Image (cartoon, rainbow, N blue to C red; front, side, top):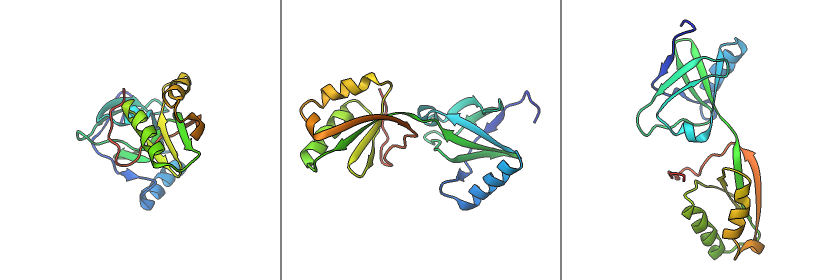
Length: 170
């Protein structure tokens, strides 16, 4: 391909986190200097049509089946081009439950759900993406009835929603 053309990609080869052979192929391409990285925010990974540039300026057009989403670690390729999809970290608010209380879990889940946020559930925590630090104060107010039963913290990470979550954010 010359430097003025765009690679059009219609399918995902697989994911390096779930396919050992693909991980090896990607590692080999990296050693040979033939691996490209496409860094995307989570919200863009949900689109089936997208035009972006890899970190080295290579133009890529994604034309995926409707409903098909990219995931962190997906590999897209055509001919000799191997491109690894890497999700950008984002601000995450984590709610850690101090006490084990089903009503508390339901109330917190209801409050987050009313804000149309995807969630990730791990151990005694629920995490969800936020747009900026000021939302810590907002959710602190929303959780005012239970604030002494939870800990709130903000950090940056690659957010992977709970598998059954298919939610639109507001």
